[in-house]
Image (cartoon, rainbow over all chains, first blue to last red):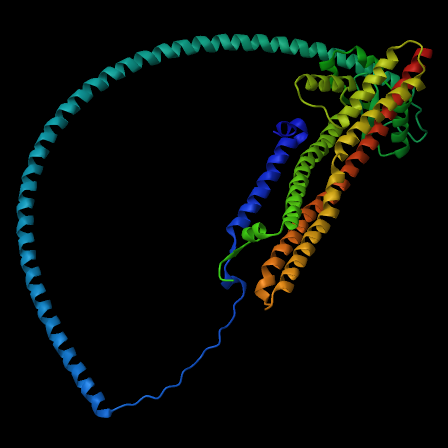
Length: 277
Length: 234
């Protein structure tokens, strides 16, 4: 993904992105319209015109009476219309009820016929199913027997192969262990030759050093992974490893064996090998 | 002023010098954004590459193995960049020189260091390319926008002087159109300033890590060259 973007030093996507950004911006500007009302809201002054009004009380009363009469007439008219409407609706309802009854009777007859037909079909279907089931069971039993035999054969073969493989593996493992222990003892001897045991060393002290190597035998790092409890003793062991500096012997090892065993390994130091305890 | 007033109509109604200024600013803005995105891709890539390559280099892997991996990467059409380029050029020179009989180990060291410095200069050039353009846009575009604004306002005041009855409605569109130029100038400048500061500090840190790597790697080569020599003598 990154690689594709960086073709031609990444210019094509950059150009596309920049143009898109500016096009979007111009579009937003296009869309935006300032309505005059948006810009400035100027309050127009309100003008109130004063005028005199004359009123005649008798005329007002007459107008009021006329309006009341009109109102009454309208009410009467509405009431009559409502009554007529109710009568029409009652008649329509009766008609609908009659129709529904007839329909229901017809449907009940139809349902009964349908039920009888279904029962007959059901009986036939059950008989057929029973026959099929028996046939299937027989076939399944035969198939299972055949499978069982086949599985047994396969398992036997697999077990034999597994036994053979394990034997081979353990043989290879034994050979490798042999080589490894040989090399470990060489390295151990080398270091021990360079080891100056401090006077504070006691017979029961044990120090374990973890060493990391490169494939050509250079030491990458060496650290105490299990201290003896005496700092001087620990330091003397590390100094001994440093004094040896490199173990060119491991160069002769095949690479996978090296990776498995010597990329990182530990050496154990006990003074009782050298001191007479 | 009853008709609605859109920015677009203002731009179209502007005088020619102001329009030229706007076009110029738009081009600068597009250009600076192209550089911003392109540099972002390149610098990000270099940054992750520094991290990945350092991790691989210090994993205790055999150096010739690492070199071969790079070669196969090149064959697979994947560009080898940054720190790995440094490593490859130094290592190649080192192995070539060492194969020549009777060459001094100091000469070997000097040759491989020179090769690495050349590669480093190349990488530096790739990273710093076009960053100066961002600085230019950042510093110049506000001035260009200001020029457009001043010109536009001047125009509208000249128009005001010719009218017998002066009102705000006569000058307002002209001033509004002139101010768009300033807005565009700032729009181009602000991202450019941000990007310039960010990228230049990032490029500095990447180049610094290149220099550190160069020193570390040449100390490894130095050790190897001199240990070989003493082994031959012994």
